[in-house]
Length: 301
View 1 (cartoon, one colour):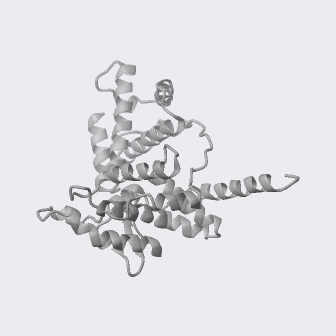
View 2: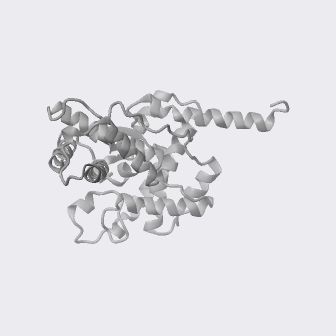
View 3: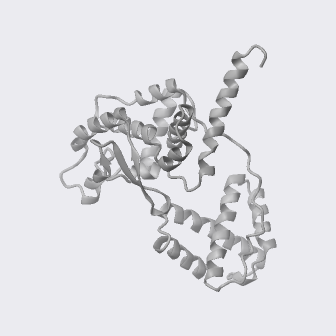
């Protein structure tokens, strides 16, 4: 089964052009399932053609007993479905044993977002007097202005931003490229950082680091985890709320647009969602805010 997993991962990288991060998630899920099958079957090399629906259901039960959350279990089931579908297309399996297994019912939770006052405090939290502070301000402004994902921002190169036109070019999930507008305050923050960026860049920096727009303290390309650490710190300092991160700014971007009447399809394109149903969660956020305001203000609510 290890060889089949390796073939599947090569398919993801070469043909579907998934990011290394996504491929690692598939690898982790499939290797966990393989380890489970080894114990369940008593074999070091379980036969994938003998995997049945009951094995998949037992695996989900095992994950639940191990303390995995519903979203995590659902993602692992999706990984198995995709893997077995690949094997069916390659004539390695006759049918997909994971198709008729239901994922756990998901709890309906609305995305956490900031109000305008919190956004202002967050954006003003980094120091305006240092290159690193200006970099962090530019990162926060860009997240809130464009709604792009963490990895999309971290991988922006010097030629990916057109500050005159107010456009950022990013590569999203599945290697899909899209253009996203950037507002005037964010462009100004990006220009201020750009003017101080040479302070972070050593003379012997590799070409790959020179091309990357956001740099670390040592002049290397700032990694996604590095971006996340900076954003998490500023969010907590400015709001006093924990467990917030770059996705909070993405949620805030979408919620504020829809609150002010933006077209749902336009927001979908800017977020890079494949399906409109994914974007519709933000309409629920807006409706909940309206209902809350109604309950608080109406005398007969």
